[in-house]
Amino acid sequence: MICDNITVSANGHLLFAGQDTVELAKQYGTPLYLMDEDKIRENCRVYKNAFFKYFGEKAVPLYASKACSFKRIYEIMTEEGMGIDVVSSGEIATALKAGYDLSKAYFHSNNKTDEDIVFGMEHGVGYFVVDNIEELEVVEQKAAEKGIRQKVLLRLTPGIDPHTYAAVATGQVDSKFGSAIETGQAEEITREALAMPHIELKGFHCHLGSQVFTDDVFERAAVVMLEFIASMKEKLGFMADELDLGGGYGVRYVDTDPYLDVDKKVGEIAAVVKATCERLGIEVPEIHMEPGRSIVAAAGMTLYTCGTVKRIPGYKNYVSIDGGMPDNPRFLMYGSAYTCYLANKMNEPCEFECSVVGRCCESGDIIQEHVKMPASVKRYDTVAVCTTGAYNYSMASNYNRIGRPPVVMLRGGNESYVAVRRESLEDLTRNDL
Ligand SMILES: *Cc1c(COP(=O)(O)O)cnc(C)c1O
Image 1 (tube, rainbow, N blue to C red):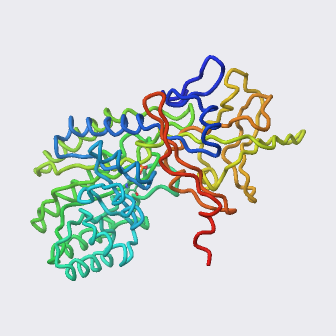
Image 2 (image 1 turned 30 degrees about the vertical axis):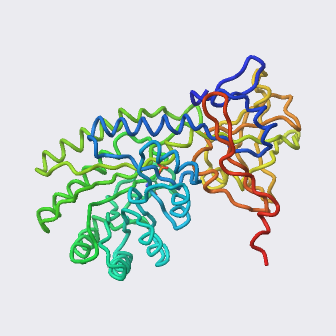
Image 3 (image 1 turned 90 degrees about the vertical axis):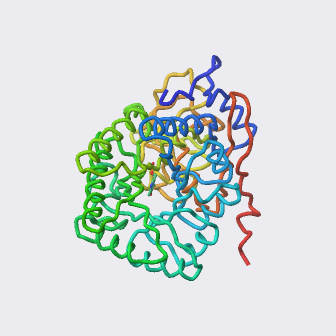
């Protein structure tokens, strides 16, 4: 199985976090997002322990909450002592509702609106990760109006290609994100920030992309960023307290995806950071990373009920499900790979090749192509799609006026509870006047 929280029972049912998915589908209805709370906590601890071990006590990993954002997640992050990234007033408001201490939050986005900036300051978001000079000027102005000094990291692009999908690569010079080191804009924004009375410059940030497996991209980014930090120390007398290397570690969606050892990776980055700081003659700044996907992806699974099975002889076969692009747009957006199972027939051989498709009026509404299912697949069977904990619920829409599925949390091998309820028809028309 692609993750150790997925197993099969003696009667051929798929188990997730030790619980029978066929029973869960019956109990809560479908489509249904499941989240394995124990796996989320385990992943947080892997990062926390590695940071503690290799970078010391002050280095805290930040959960990039755009991967999956709802109240309960922020409560878990509080309990696990994780920092967080937020990217909008909506994520800030959700964290607030969960009682999350926002002084530990980092506010991202390449285009924060004035309203976002004011909202973040009003609620005491600890750090603003400022993307560009125009934004820096607004942050300075709003901080002045509030009579505060806002802690800031500057988002830079180190000019490194992480070899992932183009849509999720963000560290190149021509990215829409950040200020480029290569063009001199990074130095310019640093000078400006240091001259602003209501900006407290704490350091620098970069984020290269997502679903990254390439061996040394974080190390190469760390070297470029530390060299920039050393040059700012020399030229401007400014020594950065913090260096945030972003998120992006890949996860296993299919058997051919590699397994990534986070502890080992953090250890390798730490070795490069320390050696580089020594070479450059600077102190080691406080290091952060911002994992999103690798905290929650494998903690998620989506369950559907099978509807029409369409066989087009000589062409192809379709297995239709009662969800699709509204709850998981990732195949449509990126051609993302997923592992699909027929959860109630795990003991049957899989010899029927099909596309698993959604119920929307859109031919691109596909969850996965070239899936192998048991030939007996039929209406009312339970279809499971694995590794859906990241960028599924958080990207879900109401396309075709379909309500978002509920999120049911699993823990302790036998407990389940609703963390987000299913959207009703009433919810769908709530804002219509
Ligand atoms: C999306 C994002 C992350 C998280 O990336 P993952 O691939 O989910 O780990 C971290 N930092 C920033 C700035 C991001 O935009």
